Image (cartoon, rainbow, N blue to C red; front, side, top):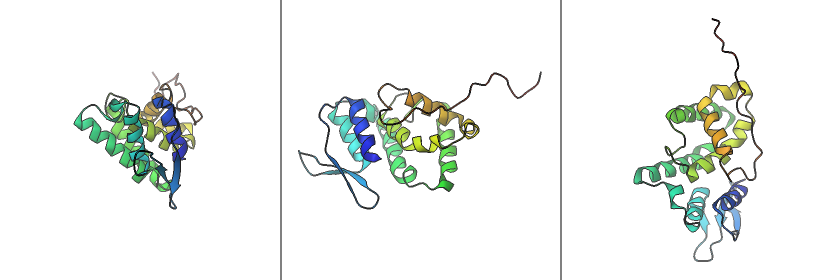
Length: 173
């Protein structure tokens, strides 16, 4: 999965020459075979390298604080999301829903590589949710829908219907 995500990230970034990737270990950690030095290991490390290679440093954050937040979400993706169990999913979605309550993107008001990789990682979870479950996580589904429609992001993933339109409220007048 991570290799397809990195390939999609390359396309989004407009990198012309595809990189050579392999995986390592039981968890299939991605490895970038770097011509200019030692191989790079890990999804977050490679994603940051690709953003720099594409001369898109703004995708890593434009202030020290936003760069730290981007790194935080990349780490969250690898340490929490990628290894979550079925029991963890509701806690992850609940935490993310609360976090996104007053944010457009994970690092505030700017799209970053954290949004891309968290979108790729959370996609299989959102696909498996019923409409009623998606409505419980309105901030996550709003963010998810926004990211899936962000130009160039959703290369290898199918679109997901996240919310039904509500015509009537549950209150009677």
